[in-house]
Length: 240
Image (cartoon, rainbow, N blue to C red):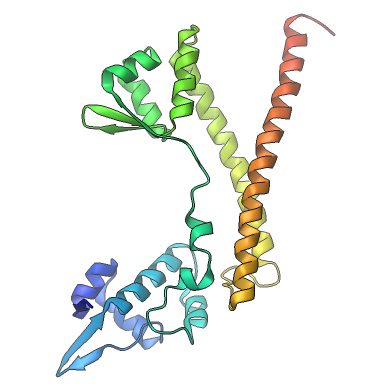
């Protein structure tokens, strides 16, 4: 087991020695063992610090963290105890990746314009790797490529994609906010499951809301596309 002095522990956990001492004083972190005047910390302290940092970044308060950590064995990983790590951290996006040369990307998109590549990077669709690129969303980028082959400019495609991204961000916010409301109803923000049954309920709720949200958004978009296509076709043909 690795041993740390307080400066080394704080550095490894990405925090400060002042915070380490503060967490100890609040009972969030076990006291170190002593070798003379030297305090010795271990991997269990580092694991606990990383859990605390993670929860703080997610908006939990010291009081909430302290309430839940009380009684948990030293070094326990809070996310594992909750049974929520996999559900919370699993990406919703299932896009496939692909490595491609700069020339390959230029041919695919019918454009070597650096500003187009920067936009794709900004949207999180590609990533530059030295002299080559990684398609972070292969299906979307290749779909863009097929549209350019049909004569649609990449500038227009990227403009439309940007507007759709902004609209979908609002949809995502609506869904996540609804999930948050359900999760904290009767508890308030900052609530953390306190036992196995609550943990299982929270994990199952998050899984099912993810599924329902994805299905609902996908099918709603398809219906909206059908409606708008029919409306705009009628308008284009001059029908009343």
